[in-house]
Image (cartoon, rainbow, N blue to C red; front, side, top):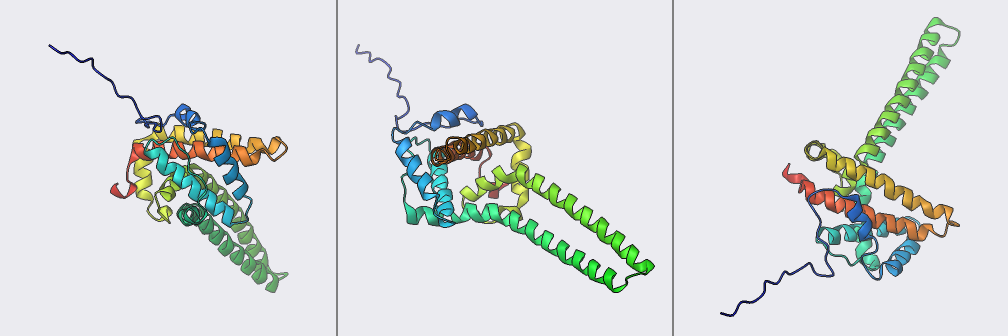
Length: 243
């Protein structure tokens, strides 16, 4: 009888499977998994110097890292200016949309305060003017409080908005139910994503203290780690449109 030994096939050296949770350690190990990580990261860091367009390309490159990480691929993408510029628009709009809403609300508030000021000026030296000024002051306080709350909420939901932008959604803020369900059903995973995002943001800022030039290395490298975290989170929660 010819008994052949059982052969266990391991993962390809070019692949790194993602588990069923959000693991910050996996994201860290992914940073240098590609033997050419240094050259690719520095090149994309230099591209980020290009005003506006460079930032969009950076997001497009990050989206490609996200897509490769979801497939378990270790190899980082090289610079593909045109393709990555195109891919960067969805995450850009996904992140900018909520900010534009906040700016619009603050603009309307400023118009109201201006109207209150003009009205109070027209009624100078009257009791009504004093009342108008009080209402204007209260409105200004409520507006500042509302803006602070909106910015706090935006900070909390930013990783989820970015994930959906990486999937190609332009305005995930307009369909919040899918994200609410995803976070509610996987609260611990989202907490790890949020903590990991904070850690990688600190790493990104580290380059500023390294004669500033280090930011061209630490910033894109931190985005690689964040992309892997987002890929893990995406694998965990699945398609937001199915919620």
